[in-house]
Image 1 (spheres, helix red, strand yellow):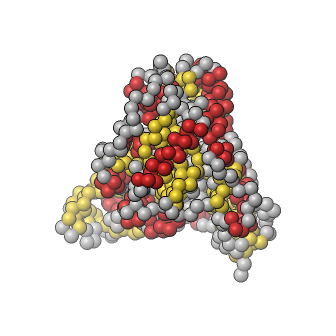
Image 2 (cartoon, one colour):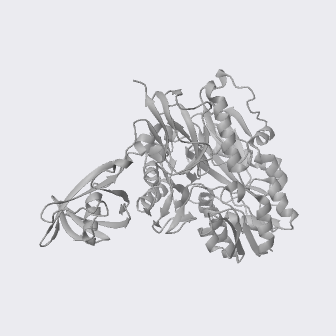
Length: 616
């Protein structure tokens, strides 16, 4: 019987596995990089072991160090989590060779399915070896790993070589394996998957379907179970194919078989030989704890139940530190507060005060709602996210709320092109027009002088404060009177540093205010306090390319030097941040007049990378 488990992963993943281990009375052991020294998963484990370094390649992808840590900490089993080495057959063998129990499928099954090229061959599908114009569009895809990394849609034959190189580099960084392949790209299909569970006694159970069609950069954003609107015949076909794939490799444990569904047909994508990020929706509708089932299977117990019938409907939203309106740019910084209303499930690797760094995935949390019907589950989740308090970097929270309420999604007519079609409307600002006034009144209550330039307003005159909200500047006016604060057209019922109550057209509204330096949060609206006068040093020449995020310059376009002519939209350099590569393109057609970026350089947000002088 297992008494102690090391989880070979980090963040939300490790915290999720630890939760079940504690419920089962199993001792927990964490591993952590130097960047994760104070991370939640390292703090909540019964013991933790340092992996020297910060980059995944030096830490969480070092199977030898993790096995050594497990032996040193006295673990008798290793759970791989999901991501990193969870689908690495050599790592599974190394765990077993060290005399430890592996909570996962046999290495041979991992080996057969971990490479998407070999998995497709097992299912009778061959990748494209020679791409022509007639094959377009195609999808370049990493043979190992998942999570949307190492994937590129190619619509022009001239772009293929560059996208292959970029995908290889990204896959090698994320998974330690740069192998990629090319397959036809199925447009406007639904991403549907089947959760399976298998024991060592020959039983394989399909545990129902999930729909994961809402994706950005081929990475899932919203998932639900069961997949809505599937004909019973197609649902049965998906389950049959999933069991067939598992039986072909003598699978054991929890796994997922993924498909694209288009025109009523199922197209096999891959088999993930691990637990999936979205497994909580299956747990909600099945009543099973999949991590507990993994542990029981690893201990040799037979599955003692039939496939459970789905109870109600569950929806999961991934809360990312990213800005969807700026090409999904990842965000970093201090997470001052994260508070989700009761009644929904929260899986997270962060608590108040934690820092969000550049080395790992930008997902902050998963929020899951379960209800008797799909409509009720969508309403419940959207409402919970709308009331979630997030003080810190920009997130995709507003996008999630808008997505869950979009008529195409509520009618279950979505597909993988959902965000390609609807992103502009879904990222339209939905801020509160009274938030800047509430921020100003709360700040006025502190009685402190502005930290910008030491200026102050004349008390007898209206006081003026400026804020940036959703990319726009807002100027608010108020005045001090004998009876308190006064604002034109609005009655100030109460104002202190943390709470402002305004009466507008006879209706009283409460605004909870929190300030962290120049960042102000009013209810769920984020603002930036602006100085009275612009800083001349912050001005940049037209055509300047600024780093949109902290990261590492991993590549500069071939032959790019000062004086090179460039066209608007042409890729000039690539930044890597949070395990993804981000393309920086020329803003105008002209000549490269400055180039400050070099491969390997670490840059902060706003750093000047290059300047393109527009052709007159």
